[in-house]
Amino acid sequence: MIMAYWNGMEWECSPNVITYLESLSTSYSMKTDTNADKEGNSPTEQVALSDEEISLSTTYRIETGASNIKEIIGQWKAMIGLAAPLIVGDELFGPDNVQLQSVSVGNISMRPDGMFTAVTLSFKFKEFREDVEEINSKAGLESGDSAVSVRASKTDRAAKKNPRKLQ
Image 1 (tube, rainbow, N blue to C red):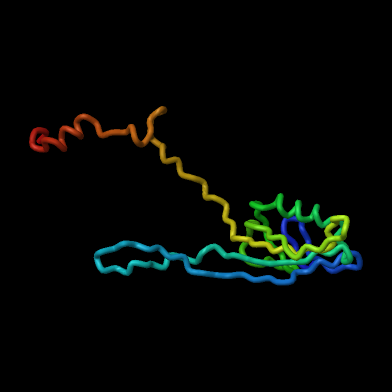
Image 2 (cartoon, helix red, strand yellow):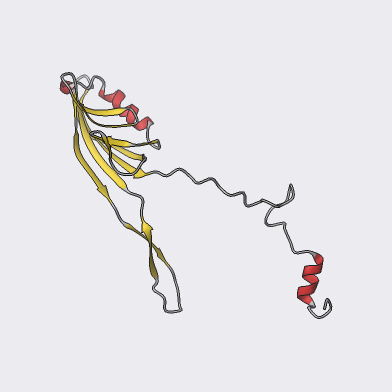
């Protein structure tokens, strides 16, 4: 039975493999904005919720069906930066997509020949949102122009210097 999965990696309890979630936690916090306002307004404003973070760990063991632990570590390492839904049971856990931020490797057990027989992996995920399509800030500019090179017309500049001459 599949306990959980993320991006093709599974935590499961079956006759051949036992890989289960040892811990699963999430956190929510307030995102704040600090200002150096001298007009008496509060220097810290509550803006919104920060991106949700999820932590979990699991132990892979040869005796419970993990065939090549070094390969499993490499698979997880290669997925750092990828985002996908985290499904626990048959429901989404947390936000729509979470990005794998880090994989910590610990509690390594090995045989005298150096083969890993057990390892605990700890994962940190963070809420992932697709970037909103950027608005073209150069809309209306002629080809080759940049926002820095755009200036007021000569008439506009003259009006600012001598507002009475143009009236």
